[in-house]
Amino acid sequence: MVYDADYAERADRHSRNPLSQQEQSLIAAELAQSSPRMLLEVGCNTGNVLAELCDSLSADGVGVDVNPAAIRRAQSAWPQLDVFEYGGHNLPFDDDRFDHAIFHHVIGHVANPARLLQEILRVLRPGSTVSIITTNSWFKHWQLPFNILRRFHPDMTILRHYSRRTLLSQLSRAGFRVDRISLFGERATLCPPLIGNCFRLRIIAFAQRPQDEADFELPMADPQPVSSHASGDVAHFAHRGGVTSEAPALQEG
Image (cartoon, rainbow, N blue to C red; front, side, top):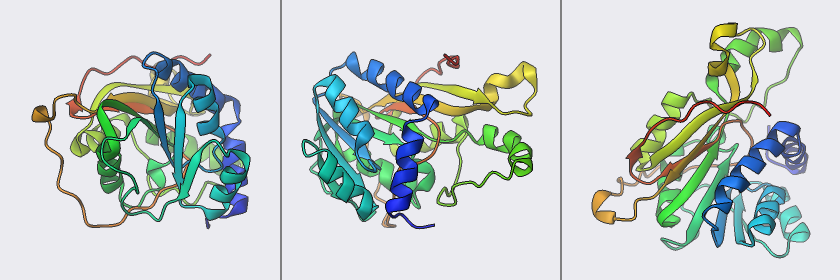
């Protein structure tokens, strides 16, 4: 599968489904508490989510995506945003530029997530935050038999799925401190009832870059290129520099 105009349209439809709308409301409510002035979305697709967040927060927005068709649509639809085609290497921004990075439905599509997380870390200001959303691997495992029966066709651009544990580890190794990580969304159809919260579709977390650089040593850059795009199912907010406590799972609403 290639990233083209058809893929951009599918990603747009995904962003408008009820669970994605709920997820965006959760992100907006969290960000409203800190009033970020400059947002970066890595994997912005056609810019709809970024534009809505910027409008609700009165913030400026910058987006990057690997899909040139999506970027053309974003530039046409949202002239107030600065959006760029991104080739999957270094982010084309100075250090310490952004107050929050939106990394939603992307990390599972990235060839080298460790490298891209380091790049996101670099362009965030001290004390600033990142939110990550991707698919919960436990949901996928338990949902697989049901999906086979209904002939569900998965997105073949997804390279990996994450559990809370593996995503926490990935963020920590990149230098983020995770404040909160929770599961939300529908439960897998075949999951055991007593542990159903472990098998929710998505994960949401919040994290921050440390204010004091003496407490943080930037990891050595990985020379391998990265590639990114929007589409997946888990959210995280992380802080730059380790892991804090884990929050209880969010309930569907």
